[in-house]
Image (cartoon, rainbow, N blue to C red):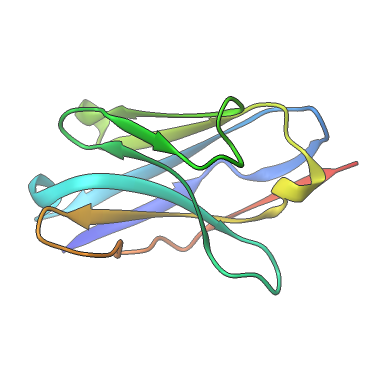
Length: 120
């Protein structure tokens, strides 16, 4: 089972930047196929932002963050990063990471989330 822990959230002014980290641990890290970053704003559904292949590093982004956010990984540290630039008030949410196994149809093993608040 994989455990995920997000960090790096905080309060930032509009136009600013933050880098989120998602650290993975557990006996089944080798079974991870992709890692994904999501967010959930109050009263809204969880929204996919970006994903990265755990082994091949291929990336995918939602249109809402493409060009502003960059996902990367450091396999030696079992950590995925989300660099967020040009933050807007609409980016205020709790940010989560999840992992997807090769034979799974949906992300799971959610972390506890980290709050990002963008002040305008």
